[in-house]
Each structure stands twice: as C-alpha cells, then as structure tokens.
Length: 207
Image 1 (tube, rainbow, N blue to C red):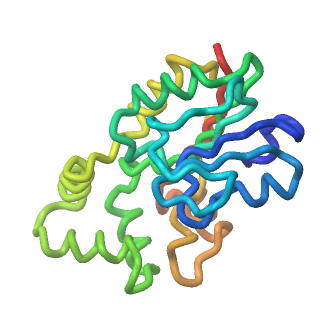
Image 2: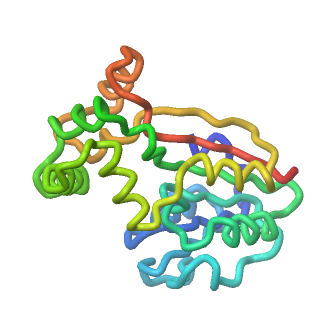
C-alpha cells in the first residue's frame, strides 16, 4: 500500500514512529529514497532521529511522510498534524496506516482472543477484560482513555482539515499478532461479516 503512493526516488521521505527496528527506512533506502526515521526508540544511524516527532527538525519541503500505527498515541494530534502539513512540499503526500480500535467490537475481540499467542498485547487485553468484569466495549473505552489512545475519527478529522483526501480504505489489522492467521484469512472473516476491519489506510495531499 505504502510504496505505490510514494513519489519516485530520490524523494525525501520521513517516517513518523519508525520504532526500534527502523520501520520502512531500510527498505526505502534500498530503493533509492532519502528517508529519515523519527522515534524515541529509533536505531543508531544518520538516517534516524531518536526523539519525539514534535521536537524534531525536519528537512524542508518533504516529498512524503509515513505514519504507521503511530498517530493514535501521540500526545497532541493537532500539534503533530500542523507540523506534518507545514513540512510538506507542494506535491507532498501523507500516507497513514492506523488502528481503528473502536471497531474492535465484542465479536472481533473474541475472534482475536481465540487466535492470540500468550505473550502478546491482544492476550493482555483479554486478561485485562476478564479482570475488569465489565462489558468488552466499556473495558476497551476505559483502557483507551487511560492510555491516551486517540480515536480514528479524531485523527481523520485532523488529517482532513489539512490534507485533501486521496483515499481512505479499511482492511485487516490483527493477523500479524495472531498465531497461524494470515491476512487473507482475516480478510475472509471481514468479508463474511464475522468481524470488523481494524485497519485504516489513508492517503492525503496538501489541500
């Protein structure tokens, strides 16, 4: 999804929240891009900045910005979106992959719990839910509020204020954190109506 929306190399691309393994930066470098990964846990290297996105100095007139499941837990989405839009060149593209946690309804949660490994975040949510003695929806909203997890509705609203929406699609999200479950199997469960899609793929350009 991400590569097909990027401008051709040697475009300058920033990844917001590249994580400790560098996210897309190594692959972008291999394909001739000039990438920069920003994350408090970023690896060592000249193509990384180990700090919060809000505190970083960005290259001028960015050709693209990637944020993969990183916006839902930033401190202030408005501040981040303003900086994103202000850093873009006139043809810049924002590519956002996000978790729509509010779509994880009871049926979707149970489907995930049946397939979750014992040491992952999904299992921890299962254990937290069991301990809470609350309905799943109440537990999930309380957990999200306590951890400052922003809703996709808010994030999309902030994005649409500053970017012209090119596309916004939904798809499988959980399969990578489940035992023996492929993306195709999760998509089949979504298409059958058994579960809800948990991923948002947003592409926008400067308005």
